[in-house]
Image 1 (cartoon, rainbow, N blue to C red):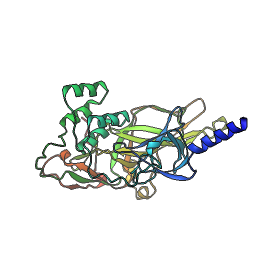
Image 2 (tube, rainbow, N blue to C red):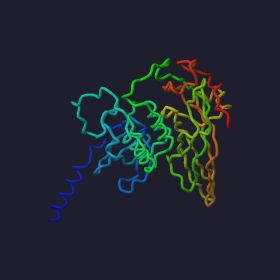
Image 3 (spheres, rainbow, N blue to C red):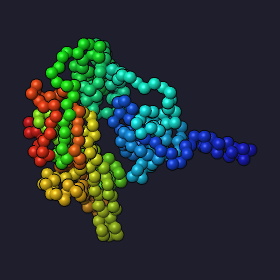
Image 4 (cartoon, helix red, strand yellow):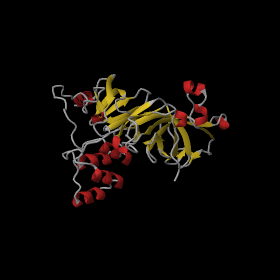
Length: 347
């Protein structure tokens, strides 16, 4: 009896495990900007984020979750709908893609349900508003529908964007501008960010996300490309515990990941002051992020609100909606010297 039970357990485990070494890709879906990765498949404690299209190694599968290994060696669990077997992200069910299905020929209009799904996914208000502004919309903005959205905890600025969005079925008025303009954000464009939460070396983990937000609007040729309050992410890149008798002392270092643009794009950035940006070697070697030393029983704590200077890592081109142009005379393509780009003045 014991032998039969052991064989049955082995067969069940084999049936729900994927072949080690299988490649997969993070699939964000239509409205997502990243895929959540968890430390385990039972408590669902967040481990980090996967970038859309990021390649991973699939290790195993248990029920609705897939265990993956990232390129930097992190191992975690992802819901199976967040892993695709195609780098283009055409599938949201790993190994269940219907290749015979015809491709979509048009973009469906956003509805109240779509917006609530983005809200439940914990996407920021700026990201949802950017998606509304760049998509065809067919919202129900009757009094009863708006009351339901408010009761569900939807951000006021998102509700306002839904009310102001033109209907997908309404005739479009003639515009003197294209629907989008290409705005070039040059390498080493300076951005000031501030810490969104307290970070202590006691609670820090290697690879842990450091939440930041943009401290001031960044404007290029009259076009706001990074808005105050937009999400930014850094991560703990070095975490060394103190040695014997605190020799050497412990060390914690951050590395900047990205800043969210007005379009919802995650633009790669790095910690680097404007002064260091003028150094030719910094353009080649980059610059280390902020580092703190700590000792046993004397952890270091970085308080929320502390500000840091970061710069764009590489040239980036954003497709900004023409509705955000400051006036009719705005150019179709905006470019500036990175040292000339400054955040807007504080009110």
